[in-house]
Length: 157
Image 1 (cartoon, rainbow, N blue to C red):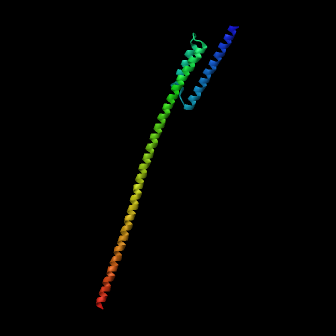
Image 2: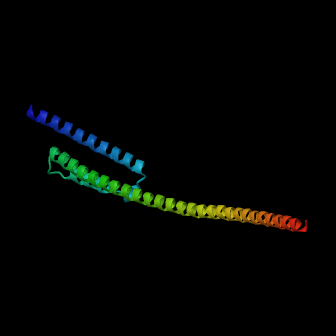
Image 3: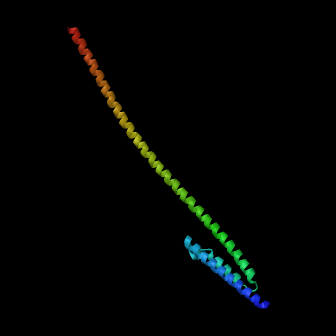
């Protein structure tokens, strides 16, 4: 009776372990697809070999095997997520640097355009002031000529 229960328990644990491993494999393939990770260079192979080694070892019980597998999966998953986080941070810093350089370049162009605009405005203002000054001088000359003519006429009378 006990041996039958024991066999049932062992088969149930094996099924649980196999289900757990298949779930991990599916999760890993989904993660690989999501992040466009090539299977050749991923750490998934290391994880798969580790799983195979622990399941093929005959002297261990199924409980120990499943515990070891879970530990291995946990460590490899934490390593994977740490690497993923590191890659994201590197990508973000590169993007921030590129954006910073782009903004600086745009600002430099904008500054040059503003300087050009201000120079044009100043030159047009200077030309306007010169024209106004010439008009002022011409008015004063006419006034002085009119005064001279009036003085001459007054003398002549």
